[in-house]
Length: 211
Length: 154
Image (tube, helix red, strand yellow):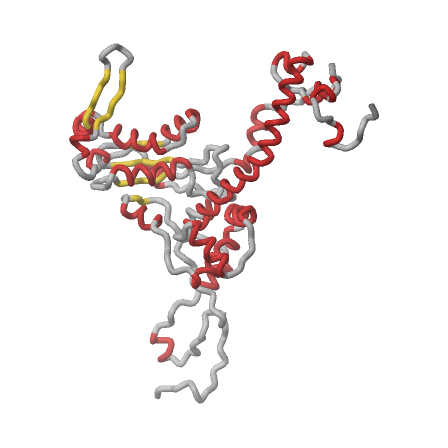
């Protein structure tokens, strides 16, 4: 028996010690009106897993929320509305249920997209359940996540890379601070720089003055 | 027998050469009888060392996979796929390895952006992923535009 006592910090402290590992989750909105099912599903699964983040790792759940709207008006190519059949077995003898995609659209249109996306996510049941719970599908234009979608998360660590605009001055100076000058400036006899941030030394002979 | 020194040399060829004390030292944290009973522990330790041998090789593969995915995500922010990005780096003779590129993509975004700007003239094709999001009716994250070229004058 060792004399060392294993120190257990209180739960609040343990969680706060991991703040550098926290990844903020963003909300994304898809309008599926007239779009192809598989393509919407592929893009949504890409975001649900968090594969658009340079922080991506399967060991941590870094996925985002996805809201899909107008799921009723999503499109299948070819004759799939008639021919694509969703099958499941209830467990009882003779209990094979076969539902055509057309019928599924009438009964519960969200299931078409949900099922497509579920098949595109990883097979790990813990991850898949959590990621599917972050997927919200609505048949019409109405969705109840307007507040979440309006707010884009801002954090000190990672999200600045791909969500909020860049704020470092040096970058702005290099690329954005010196737009094309208007004709007014030339008329007012102001010196015209050749490159944005280099002051060109122009000779007086080259520079014509209108009087 | 004289005990040999050094890491690998401590363990002789057969498991019978490994002393009981060493077996139990390895078996710390094992489940049930495998940590306390020598016969069980000996088998589990042997298996554990096999797993460790395999894992040392798998670790290198798994990490490279993760880095490639992270670089892909980082370069997609500028409309570039991983393959185009690496092709551009090769053309410009930038010898950064995937580990460093992934770390840049995660922690040094402006350095990563400057890499993208460096290789932009040597790339003819932009990837399709960026346009797919528009096809699919996606409104949300705004993927950044490609930074302008770095010319010799600047």
